[in-house]
Image (cartoon, rainbow, N blue to C red; front, side, top):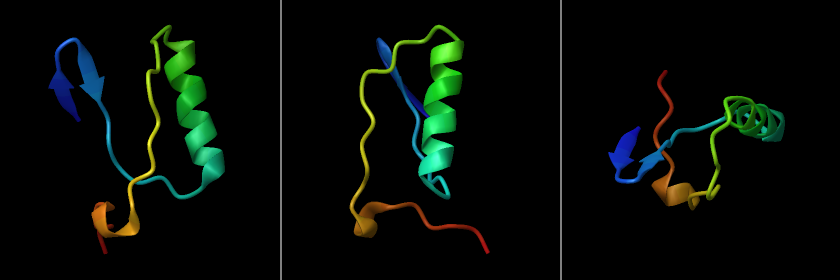
Length: 50
């Protein structure tokens, strides 16, 4: 997570599309405004821990 005034940027990997929808739902439920969702190219995705 990083804060870039006036925005907060969250980044990470999610296991599937259902998890993405769940996260968007939680953000909406908190009353936050979602500006953008972006999928990174495979070469830029964070490494998953073992």
